[in-house]
Amino acid sequence: MKINQAYLKRILFILSLWPILSITIDIFQDNLGANPVEFIERHFGKWTLIFLCLTLSMTPLRRLTKISWWILYRRMLGLFVFFYASIHLLCYIGLDYHFAWNAIKNDIIKHRYVLVGFLAWLLLIPLALTSSKRMIQKLKTNWKKLHKIIYLIAILGVLHFLWLVKKDITEPLIFAAIISLLFVLRIKFSKSKNH
Image (cartoon, rainbow, N blue to C red; front, side, top):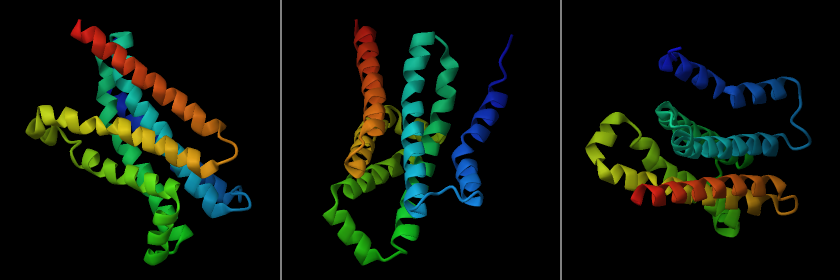
């Protein structure tokens, strides 16, 4: 049976909007807890990490399953990483600090988790800007080199979450374990490719 990739891509796109739908439901049902701003911020922060893990898993899945079409979804998932990271940042700037730029600047300097989170978002910008087919053709081998930054972004994202929660570090450690496994798989496949 032939799989319609364009149809699957549309379904994946719709499913990728679930974080927005779910938070909208929570808002209307008043399920945001004692600190609604923190709830919304963390919601989009966690979904950023989920989409980051999904994006990083596309290449290992292609190599493990020998099915090439996993890669067709990588770019879209990567753009959703940037999308949800940007919403996460906008919630912090707008809902938490009401665009008080001096206070935001001081918070970045004072708290390391804010600094690494902001650095991760900044590093996502060139990846989002160079995600088109045109930019892939233009940058050629440099495109792959540039997009390896995603692994640094993943580390910064986990550190951001780990330093933020402080006490219950279960969720950050789960993300750290998944990303570590994806790193190991990448190294393993790179070594086998060279032999």
